[in-house]
Image (cartoon, rainbow, N blue to C red):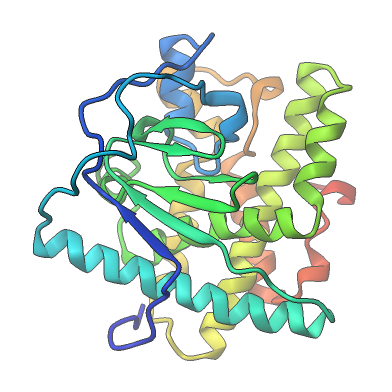
Length: 281
């Protein structure tokens, strides 16, 4: 991805190194479930985060950073700026205004509008405060643990979380959360899958517009598809426990995540991403 010497977003909050050393409690989750959730993008914080009055993760002085990490920060700011450009224009075409989200960089744990989050939950979006959160160390996990290297794989992570912000602005997240309260766990999980696949589609829409701007390089889309495949529910469950439990899926299979990202990338049309009424997910 051609990202250097391009505009960087001013909507990044840098909380790295603040409040290191505190703990995080995840109520009611076993070790295996926590590990699986830690490997997924777009975890619903309201299901994972518990308010924990331990060390305040928003207090203290930021730590010193290294050049490699500062490079990742600049990359993240540039990708976020690119999502702003794309979604501002898309919303303008829809006759409405895009409200740009904040993206918070943190180390180890952070206090969000959804509770105190540890880095183990991975990147996430919090609807109440309209902020996305990421520990830059996740990029290393993406390459080493998920075997999904490349800067565009990292860009996909950001675009997916911003996709949740788009869903939040359009009222989709609120409708899903409300409907889930009246459903069985299995049915609620199905709605969660549809929500996550739509965020993948929206990441693809962003990638479509990025290509039109001429910032994609050869192999970039393959990197994004590799990341989408790496974090499919079926693949992760098979790796962690040797078998899959479809009723417990919350994000979709590797095949589904690839399919919806590709559909967004190929069409670039937000109207084509209705995962909730799709005949085939």
